[in-house]
Image (tube, rainbow over all chains, first blue to last red; front, side):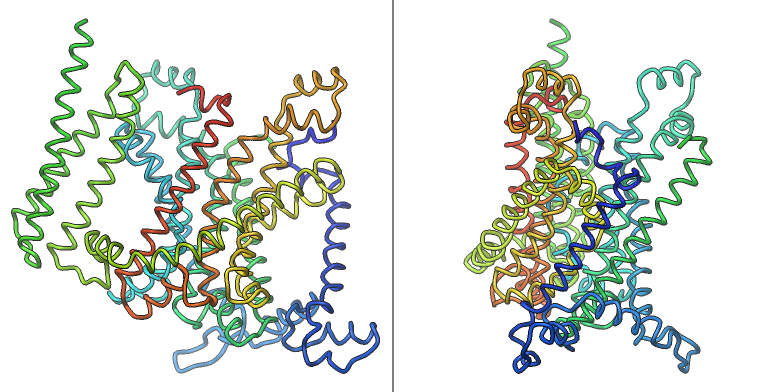
Length: 304
Length: 325
């Protein structure tokens, strides 16, 4: 039986490095091969003959339909390391808006604020739902229904409505992120806080433990692994929320704005490099949460 | 006998509370509109009574343990309905009583009126975004993810190579490829469907592969002792066992499809579609139209999701999470 191993555990298991490398190499090869057919109609290629030459040209077009991977990496390098990071203005030294790090920071700050707000909200809702039968009956269905609404569609409204009372910049985007990421945290925490079994709860009752004591000594520690599992999901969709939150404000600042301005001016390489940077950022955030998870679980005395 | 009588008595008291809540809620709305623009104390008194009574009714109903399943289901339905109605009434009353500017937040009645007067536009947007882009994209993405998951299951090398990549990509802001796909496939629904395909592919792949590994060892050994082929094992054991995972992906993808189709329209569309409507009407500050579009999107999204839940109940009736109720 070959498929016995649970797929979630695959990345850490020995024996998946070679397949991953092979498949990545295949994807890369297919990508380079696709550059010529995708860019075939561009004027730069009109008078080039010979397959090798055509390919060489297709990998170095300024505004291609499909840029070659090395073009994206080069653009990413040029717009981060190759551009001055700081700029001197009247107010002192600030991040240079021509540098992609500036845009990433704008998005990241909204992501982190929204992530913090959404996670807190999710935890509070979960605690309420676990402790009150009324809340669990009345609120839980709406928590689920709230997710069947295409929330990102609400993003422009949140921006405009909050803008009309003078709230612009970071906070509206963070609110969109928070709305997106409270859900996995709330669901995961309800599961986690309910995970202690009857025996353990009965033991707390025999000790005459109060609701608060039961919470802090039993329910909360039992819920921590669930919390981190949902935080990993929450942090990535928080980033999605921040990026989409930047679309309706017009192309000003942030990775979403780079995507939008790139699509206005046909700067495909700029879009791809912003996308790659967002991917790196997402990976970084997940790694950070995973590290925090390991440290916390270790401090709580779990064995790997 | 006496327990049932007490039960019935409690039920009657509870029904009275619901009636009272609905009555005071209606009164609050009427008062708010009567004093429109002026925050009169009687409006808030009615609202406070309505909210208090609703809370009490919800608490009673949540504690109710009717003996027959039909009234249990009714109680399970009425509590969230009351809660939702309470929020709607509060929203309406506060918006009207304080004269909240429409730009900030239009009252639900305004949104409902807007929906009623612009049904043709909303219908055209719905067809463009949901029927032409979201649903075809959802079907293609789910089928493709399912097919690749079967391939992964057949060829272990592919699974070991593709799953870490799939898990990684599911964590990425995939919506960002929308501008690229709009460039490739043009402004019409094809590019939106393409965005939906890419967004729904990986959740389906990851979930199906996880689901195909979910069948127990005992059952697999049984199939092997029958000498069943890979295909026979798949069809009669492993696919049914994977159904809860597959439906999970279908449900996640239903919301993702709506989001993908709408957000992709922010990057360029013909002059019809929900995302187009939202972005242009926001620009014209016609927020009631935006809210009307969102209401349609919310109803469509919830209906889509609810339909999937119904089908799931029929297909995975054996699953413990459904049997326990």
